[in-house]
Length: 392
Image (cartoon, rainbow, N blue to C red):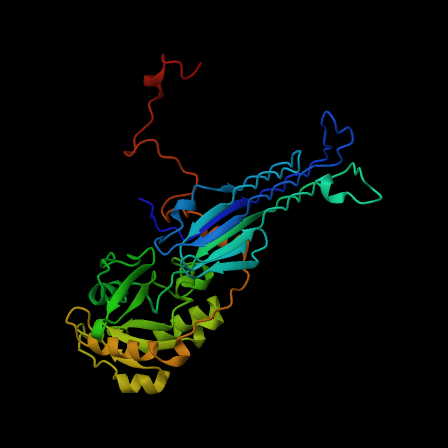
């Protein structure tokens, strides 16, 4: 079944055009020259983005590809103004970033709950001929047309808001850690890529304090070239204050795996390297083994801290070893003044690359375009279909 987590949609938006002003002259039985009294046209409706903290995905916009506001009404006689067009309000989750759907240019973003951003402004209504009367032109026979509408293809991308982001290879223990420190229930299994969509969990800390942790699908070497699930989910850790790297203790080269992950982040967005980073050696209850079957020692946290220049902690989500220590270290990083304000610059996106990533890819063992009529392979006996008109 397809996931209900939708973090990318492309829609067509159009605001309403302004109503035309009226060119009308007052007519009454005893007033043969009543003068101009044409009213103004109404304002066209606008397209407005509204932040809603109760939304988690862009699923409600997946099948709503066209969003259009209504036009303003025409002005009337007796200086009657036309009706204003109705605005269209698009509810989006907090953390939604908007790009131009044709050029990839960054337009705006919605961060806070109840924040309103006018995406496309409706056209102004035209002035009626009553506004153009002067002492030398007492009977103007013209009025303004309304301003035209604005239309644009836009791309909405969701970048979830969290304090800590988990980064690691598949089966590094990210989902297990999230399930232990929070009430989240991500899928956990002994095969790669069990996490296909980002997961959020609220981690409870001492004195009723808490922080938010985000788990994204695993990254592999070459993800920037499209291998595995690519880098499409890395947008969800751009707003995190702290990046927590997870490498299993049984890994033959812990330092090497960390540097591979760091390299993939740099290829996606070099600004990610400016964030606070920590390394957790996970699955410490499973020691590494040599080719001869001998148990190898796990590198000490002090040794790795000196080599990598970041805090290192050993944890085991199964036994609970180091979990409290990890929470303390994360809270210390989150409360530092330099990690309080998270500002990221949204670079323009490559439309062709993004749209290619969002297209469903065929399975490796299936050729694209192949059609299977029967689940069980068998010889097709066309003679049994004769007589029912299929060959006429």
